[in-house]
Image 1 (tube, one colour):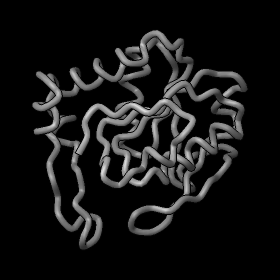
Image 2 (cartoon, helix red, strand yellow):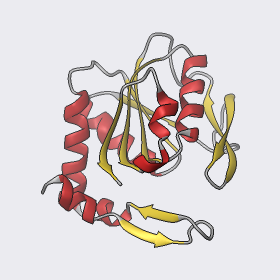
Image 3 (tube, rainbow, N blue to C red):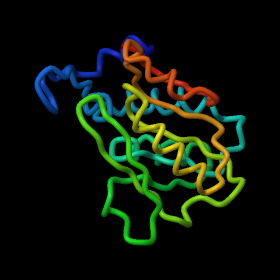
Image 4 (cartoon, one colour):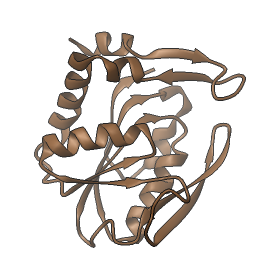
Length: 173
């Protein structure tokens, strides 16, 4: 299965979550075991020699990818979530979305200073979500080795907001 075949597994959903947005739905790819394995193997291969300590997944589909990558890279994993979803003391960061604003939180003890971090999310659009996630990790002293996405909407130029970080996306639209 090549990248083109993986790309075909991404379903377009018009007007979601609001009118005018064309949502890229990764659930058909996740449901196909062969496609999911290929995607995780390809992203894992990119970062296999980086001595990753922790793979951090961003709410919510990023959790799925992060857990699989952590297993593949023999690393730990933790979560960056929406406000009020984590049970312990947190740090918070707000950010702008292409259709509004939101916030993210991480446990205050989720990252140890100097830990080598791979940050993962399902999709890179404008870069706002990942910028907030990177801010949270920096506050905790983590060293971001890379930022990985299953899908990138390159026409939105979100990658430009992530300057100074290695950014990898498996599938581009």
